[in-house]
Length: 164
Image (cartoon, rainbow, N blue to C red; front, side):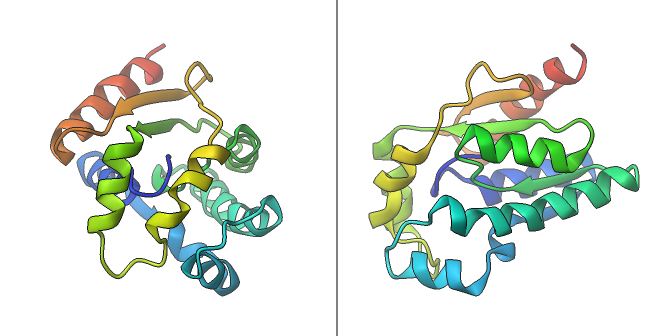
C-alpha cells in the first residue's frame, strides 16, 4: 500500500512471485469512471473509492475462504479503507506500507509512461494518506532502494509480524 509512484505493482508482483501466491493488481479493479477521473487530474473521493475497495475486498474474501494467500497492490490510503479491507478478508491481512519522500515519488511519477495517474495528483494522495505506522499488521518499508532490496526488507518485516 502507498501513494502512486511508491512501487506497489512492482513490489507486490515480486512478493507474490517469491511467496508463490496469486497477485492481484488493484488498479485493474477501478471502475472506468475512476480511471477517467484520475486521468483528467481529478482526485478520487471516498465515494469513488468505496466500490473499488469492495471489489478488492471480494477478492480478499474469496481467497481467504478458499484458504489461499494473495498479494494485492492497493493504495489503501486511509485507515477506514484498510479497516474495510481487513473486514472483507475475514482473516489475517497484513499491509506493506511503501514509504518514500515526495521527491522520490515525484521523480518516479514523472518518469512513468502510459499510466492513467498523472504526477499532478501526488500531492492530493499525500494529503489523503493517513500514515499507517504503528497500526497492527502494518510494516513500513523505505522505497528508496532497488526492487529486490525493498522486497527483501518487506519479507523480513512481514516475517516478524507473521511470527508475533
